[in-house]
Image (tube, one colour):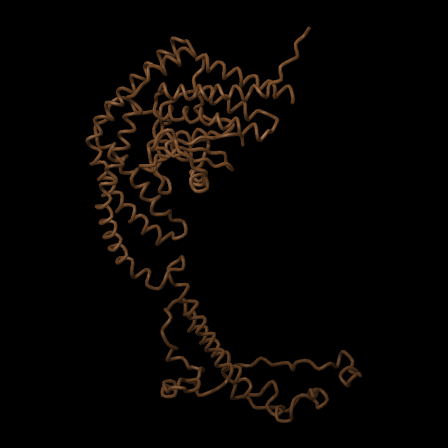
Amino acid sequence: MPTFWDMQPAGLWPTQPSIPPIDPEQGSGWAPSTAAPWESAASTPDYLGPASLTSWGPWDDDRYRQMLADAKRASDFVRWTFGTPAAPRTAGMPSTAPSFVPPVDRAQATAPGAPAPYRTMDADMAAAQAARKAAAARIGQATQPRGGRQESAGADLPAQFIGGLARSGWKAVTDVPHEARQAFTDQWDALKHHAWIDPGARLQDYLANPSLAKAAQHQWEDFKDGGKSILDLAGLPFAPIQGAARSLIGHPYADLAQLVDSHFNPTGAPNPEQRYDEAKRAVDTALMALGARGGLPLPPMLGSPPASSFLGSRAMPLNDKLKLPPRNLPGNVNGVPYSGHAFDRMQDRGIMPSVVDETITAGVKSPGKTPSELLYYDPVNKIGLCRDIQTGRIVTVYYRGRN
Amino acid sequence: MSAYDQRQYRLMRGLLEKFEQNKISMQHATGDLGTLLRALEERDEAWEELFDSFWKDMQYESEMASYRGTVSKEALQCARDAAAKLKEVVSQKIEEPPDEF
């Protein structure tokens, strides 16, 4: 059913009363004037009570005072919450500016079971207080160190540093025998690799490919291996020193790097085992640089190739039948020790350490030809590997079957 | 079976014979056998498992010889035994042409 307002023409539709430009500071000096001619009873909505009409008008001082109070209260709230650009945020409301938040009745607030500590029960005040607390909590969280650290993370950094050094120092001392044994094993493996040359294998190679040039090349390689084996033999007595240096320097260095990295880059920091492995390799490199070096430097490829260097693949393995000299030093990946030969083979065949881990975890075990060897076979990835039981070292990794 | 696969099988047998005659090294024979195996078009799982059961012995000996830098007599003999078995396995797949009268 159409009402009276529906029957009014569009031009006579009641609109908001126009507000003349006023000076807010002059608010109380304005004298109320008479109502405008268009402000008749017909243009007044009928849902307003008669009492509201007395304070409803463009020049109602009480209404403007209330609006001004609301604006100042909102401004103070924002200034208190976010602070001014020049001055830091203070703990409480500014005392000089007029506060429109009702003051707290402290006696009432401390009383047990007391209602809200405000003298007013206005819902807006409660909502404002809740919003202020939420904003303060949000700002407090934003000012914490990145990575979701706790409040005491920054303050505890020196304590963490000292505690970490103490722990790593103890670990470094107790790990010396293990590292010395590992260094001796590395040297012994290198010595075996370089010193033991089977004439039968050379004869077999020569019969397979009767070339004098090839034979001379093999002789030259054997001669170089003989020199390397002398160096390996000379290095055997120093294996305990090398192992002690690995442990005593590597552990504190790795823990310090781990602590710093975990504080500033908690998500991207490598695990402690990986960090220690890197530290050990750095110590080995530093020890190698200490001694007097002679002769020509190694070609870049025959040194320690970076992990980003090129790889072979199953379909196109590198170093296939070329018999290049070893390139990689023994090392650890994810806490698993690898021989240098295993690293060479993995690089030649494009086998990632994660695939080796999967083979160890989910592969089928079988005994090797000697009691100290254990063979693993992953039938999914068609990867086989040989592992030394005593040292846990991965001896070699190879493809098996047809993928 | 395609003539292409027959050619791969014959190449395998030729490799194994060369290894028996000491004309190629153990690493050479092992690597080339793997290459020829991957080149096959036919997929015969049972035959491949049988092949792998002997080929893995050759691979193991080849890898350990490469790791140690030496080829022991025992390792060479073990690889030759495996190669003899492999030759039988490969011969099962080779279709000899009928004798022409």
